[in-house]
Length: 302
Image 1 (spheres, helix red, strand yellow):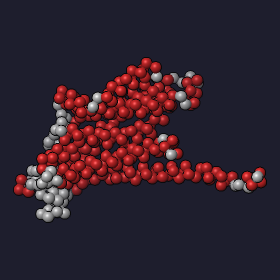
Image 2: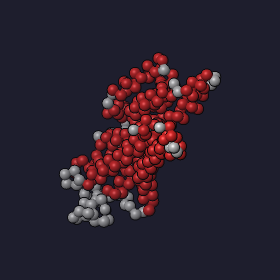
Image 3: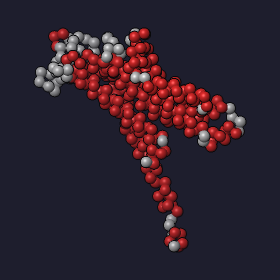
Image 4: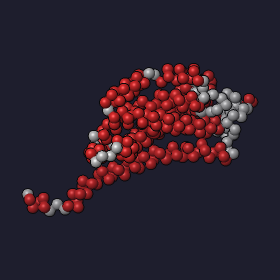
């Protein structure tokens, strides 16, 4: 038995141990790349296409050509590939213009939610004690409130505008981010390198900002990507209810709201922005899940 074990090459044993994790890491990086590529291309398209002059003015009205069908349906024309809206606006041009504002709201909405959420979560998870108890109760209280009630209260008091919309996204998005970062910070607080730094005399502020927060960045990036999809859905819901983006500004949610009255005879007015919202939110959520898997060793092993 000893001879058999001795004849096993060390290199092959090492390859057996280290091979699969290296392959999984390559797979995780590849999945993240392919999931982020469509989002990058979409962002470039909504920025570059209006500069080419090929698209119509998204706010230009053609009352003699209202609710024209897309080019692939009978009666459609390639001058309006995706048809026209209730006042003759080109749907394709509105999709591009609305995509620019919707993506902007998604990214900025994620930042205003993930910033305070991360700060509050790290404070609760690292300080523990009564600070953790108070913050945890605040998180539970915020999560118990439906976001639509918070949105109604804020918009009724401040009116409908982009800054107010970002305020709503911050108020409704910080708590989920704080809960996740709190649990991660609580785990990092008990790691050996943190206890070693504390024993060496490093200040608590230095430990938090130089060592704990950098180890949280992978989780924060993943949460931020998920929050982009949440911000897009919140904006779409508020615009659909008439409390979000108002004319002459265009977003995919506002396009959905304008197409709900003509859905029976002109489905394309609401269908194309709805499909755009679904596709973008799906890609963002898949990207966030891939980033969480990439930065969580336990999920990588599974």
